[in-house]
Image (cartoon, rainbow, N blue to C red):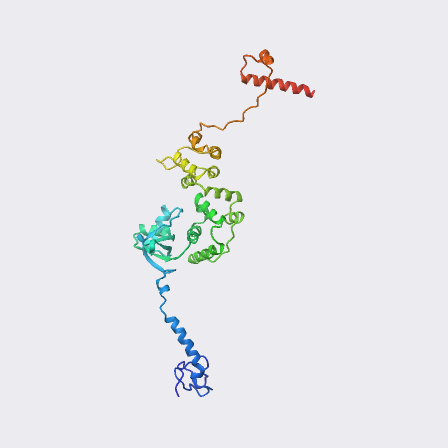
Length: 359
């Protein structure tokens, strides 16, 4: 008697767990020929093996989530990357670490230019430090077919996880809040990506809040009004945002300037930039910013921008009211008296008159 290929002995049924390639009794206790009992399982097994051995060209060609060593000269920064790279001691420490240990955590990239280049989503600092350290390649996880919104999530959320909100520049904080508040992407997709990033960082998942001004503010320890001001800062010209980040322009003044059109902001940046230092050539106070906003509301900012910035154009004080005086009275009492004195005389006379009325 032949033995089942699964090793079942005489004391076992072959059952549905054993199959035979030819009709014979695999054990004395088996009530039927093996081809009757096991034939259906043989067919099922053959189907599963066929699926496993089929060559999947799509999976073979896809780079999705693969980790590859990519040459540093094939990597390019994210097209809308607005976060400041590490400098000084922090950069030096990373360079030394990479020289000693290599890049321990892969960066995240997406293919661009038909796969000729890879755009960095996460890991701009590791890439920069790798170049300084003389590395030829950087390990990278490749993400394919991301939408613009999904790519933006990777860039924004990874910077938040690595640095923390308080370490970001004012303009960077404004960008983060704007993306959250305006609900640029679906909350579910954002949570999936955040949890993926946390897993890469070796951290546990955390609950994410929905986008509302109060909840966004609570998440970062900001008041509702501060959130509102930072949302306005995000609408500024990039150059003017630089003034805010450098501490040359206050956030409140920046809020006023955010109401200028893109064209007016561009003109303001060109007009008020000291190209030798890259900073502001003239200080813009909140009062000056309000004047520029008022002029813009009246479509006059282009004509009066220089005079407002130089302080030549002051806010007009409310004009006084005029009163009529009989000609004979004027000739009798006020001839050859200047207007300022006349105003003082009229005020004194009125004071005396109303004082007498109350007695």
